[in-house]
Length: 320
Image (cartoon, rainbow, N blue to C red):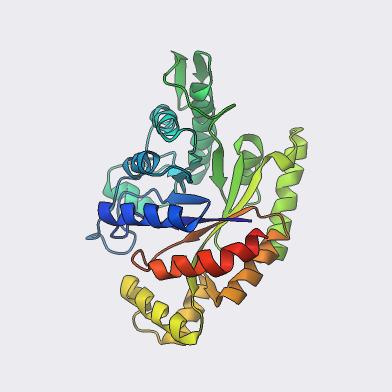
């Protein structure tokens, strides 16, 4: 299993902070670095919110080894032709390290705030499927043609082309077992399950995805299996309590709770919480079910000691 780091760039992240995180994650040996894609904080609208694709461009230019990408870009935020153009450029700039995460979009308040249409779920999924067709055709080598309900192409052939062949990997995240998982089966190179999930529940979803792949004569082993989850780690209860208190500062809804209450609330929200040994056990159980990468959501952006603890004590155990 490989470990990556995911950062919520809309929750007060600064450019200096992003540069520090990039350098730290690469130096510590993590496999990948990921950015959420939101236009505003989901907690406090006064917080800094860095544009995702500008941050990814910086990652392409200022790192040398990390795979990286958005987790994930809502199809409702940008026209898929624009996404394809940006993805090809960033992939070329990085020497072929981008993973393109795409989703249907979910936060209606954010869309309203920025005047973006927020269609019903069925239409958003229709747009996602058409958008993926547009993106993949534009990333190909031939002039692109497409006539859908929402998007059309008439011979576009953007350049430069991506470095990666046969294409930039497409990542789609979902916990659904119906239509979204069918979209994963048809289009995705990587499948992400957001939130900590029990091995038994993961097995059910993985088996369903494999069945959908067989329905379209695709080998399910072609799709990389990933999980993304928030975490709190501490060598002992005192360290965990310190990090719990930090979360209370960052997440006002946790402030009235005591440490036990915060821990229970975060576990209910599917956080991964514990000592290195406990986190290793949880990750290894997922690895046994075929999970190949876990993206750890690093919420306290200034807490580099937590990343060091993961890198030094957890990463070697799950890698072996």
